[in-house]
Length: 120
Image 1 (spheres, helix red, strand yellow):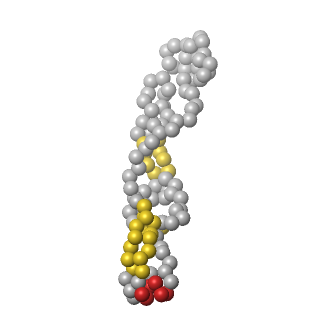
Image 2: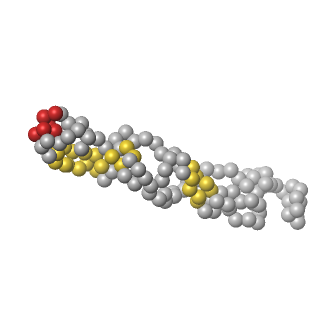
Image 3: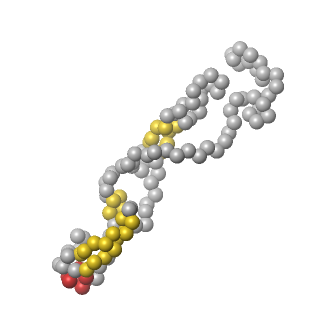
């Protein structure tokens, strides 16, 4: 390997990295994400990126782009609110009923008052 300003020459090259000092690998890491992220928003994860100089510098920051998949039950209203819809028959809306809805915390029974209008 050439000196390239490092101040030394390596005679035996590592068989894993072939002397460049970096080895490609898959890394799985859990990252806490704040609530209210938007699709396309970027998040900086400190010291999880590449180092500028593999021999002397600290790792750089990793920049993540958030991609939010649509959910089959919930729809995002704004940054912090979600909604779900339940279809009722005309008789259920006029007379009232009890229905079970899905929430992010599990199923919830709610009472639909008699005379409920469409969209309520």
